[in-house]
Image (cartoon, rainbow, N blue to C red; front, top):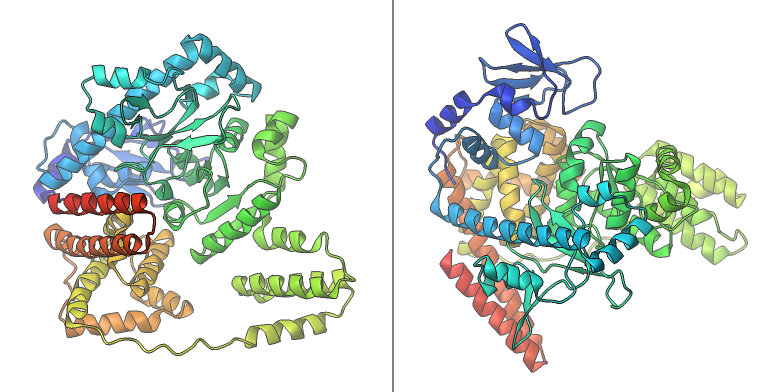
Length: 594
């Protein structure tokens, strides 16, 4: 979507900076402008300056902020185009938007409106009915007061199974839209509410729009404790973190994020004052969710369940987070299974104090998990633990950390440090070479397609905001399928680079690539770009950028169709085969409409 420079200039000049900034910062008059405490980092002396005349809101300490568009992008963590749209509305200025994007925005708005109506009904049902009173008693028994219930928008789906359907029907919504939004289901001969007599948790995107619901069984009448909305245009489960909309400013201020496994743990921590808290909605952490984190902070604290499943989830989460060069710490709750249980048993204040005094590095946490119950007389178990420890020490790639934990392990086993370090050195050098793989020759078609990948990468290097805009597109509908695996690795390295740097630096980026053994792939891409004359002068051209994105989306769609066809070919169940065939047909039709 392109917005003319003249329109952007008009929006910037029309913006009342005081009116824009004052909801986020307590401003005081200072000379011809205003000053306040920076909303992007903790400080005691005001260094955040606002100038009405220059249309700037900028922190002289951390460097965040800028013109009204940049300020909105930073404070709300939204893209350039989203900030432009929001400011245009703020100033009652109409801007010329691309028709395709406008249609998509209208489609999203329809989902938001449907979900808002549903939330109002669920809230009213919780607070104004006899059944609601039972659910309220249950929630209060879990330690939630009315203020907390309202803060998180918790409600109750009606018991009769058609109240929401009737309300949406009266509001002139089509059944197809209700089903698509995962609020109603078609039972063949009739339509029925998707959530029935379940406590509802609205799931919101980073901007606070309700995109889905999770329904909890509170009567022990179902095998499924939680039931979530199906994925929709606005709800991609692998990209969302529960409570990020409420936590985002605190994450920025405290420069850390706390990760839990479930909603109730998030609510418990939030009530205790740990407001930079989110969860991955009962599922394993995904790359898409981690990318959201990398844009906000490099410091992650894992606080998962203390049982065996929680330990396994913690180790898996660390392995994923480590790939993105994040600093991972852990809080283990020794006396209870999870945060929700700890708060109920010991209270909010005790939990807050315990949490902040029991944060340890992942390697310390894992070392304790490996060795606390180790039988030093069991040779086979020692070898097993040793191999595991070596594996994670290698991931840290630090002589100091290696030295510390090998010393601790040697002391634990009652063996010499030298014997352990010898084993470690052997383990590091004893790497089995990968089998040599012969790459198939690329077709002319594949070589031609590389031009779009290269051009896209050059655009991303020109400005961080453009890189984030492209990244959002690639994440959406899994458009990463349109690019090669090596390209995805190069792209993720660039996104990680931007997590720590606002401006691209080729020399620094090359150093990182060499560390990750990706420099040769990058150099190959640079040579290819010269060969095909695909390099850009880096002047921002939205039309050209859109063309690159569309080509990649087209290839991603073809791969999705091919994958679906492969699934159809392998499927032996006739009904499932028909279902997959219909899905492929609908996918093809959707693509043809775009």
